[in-house]
Length: 267
Length: 207
Image (cartoon, rainbow over all chains, first blue to last red; front, side, top):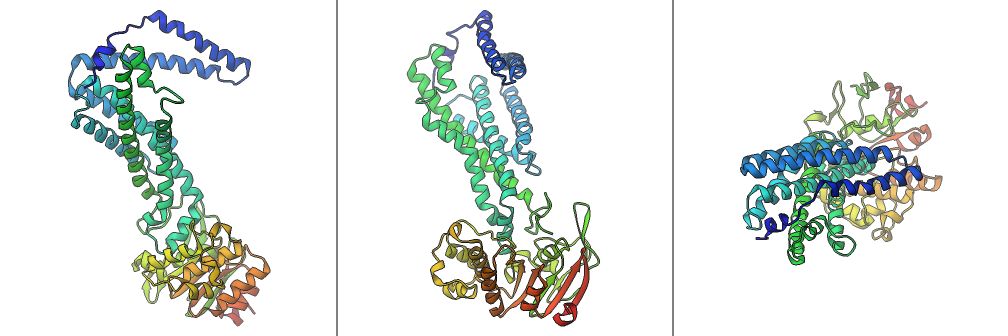
């Protein structure tokens, strides 16, 4: 077991330190204003939201840690899955009925990966581990399934002629959509695979940075980071796979016809 | 039989028979020719009425089996990534038919050297012939052809037409060109604005 608790309590951040870091927000806004990037408003809104949202989440996590019951953790994770699916649905606007596949994908990805890390004895099933790891797992699962379904929506439009030509040969919907599903799955997973390849070389991942800042030993920071990266790989592949395999069906009728989403190209 | 799409009527009160042999569906663009063809192998179903194939309602046929028996070559080539041969093999395996590679290529007017060619490097005319070969690899009883020469120049068109003339199965050809219908068919359906404007032997409909 990794001595996370010891590391996490060894640092205290004062409010003035956070306030001071706003100087860099001002710098970002100044650059945007100077270069007419038209992002000043967004930067202010983003900063305000980050303060409010993270503070609220901080209090929520504090409450959950103090209550120390698994049910509150499960409720929080369920809420994350629900809001994750709602958020991801907007990126998958071209996929009909994408909410259900996304909801199932996130629930399955979160449940399976958290279940596995607990079953393997990597983390204790306590709020201190399940809440942060669950948040990362579900967040990454959401991004991956949203990217995969976004691609699926585009590809099903672009490859319509090819898919219909396969259907015309008597292929099942699954056979006709297989190349499209494969590419969508890849695009959902590739970002994390790539960042796992370059981790430590081109960027220091957040957990490691956080642990180092909190005073943990570099060895512990690296080990925890590796565990989280591998956990995320699992979660991302489960969610992208589940979402694409459930969602592609919504493009077809039971008689293996492409649904009329847009008008045919020729009448 | 009738069909609507996007709130518009595409085919209306259409009642016609198609015999064995070479049939052409002709009419101006937008008349509903391609839509009618797609209905014949259940890539879509009519909203009203019914289509029958060999005395049985189309809806009672298993769609995948029907599509292997009634093949369709779409207007624009849509081959799978890979070689001509891998495309033919895919189609033959779907139909559970052994693949006679050279014979199938020859029926579509392609010589054996095309088997190993990458489909991405073929001209549109060659791709369209590969599409025809792919459909023939399933040994269909009926072949539906949607403007198979519309994207081609005269020489490529002649090659496809020659191949079609040699086929010994029933064909239904969609064409906006009455001359092509004259060259390739014995029976004609003429559509105008989604309605039947004529149906019968070539000489009567396209006088």
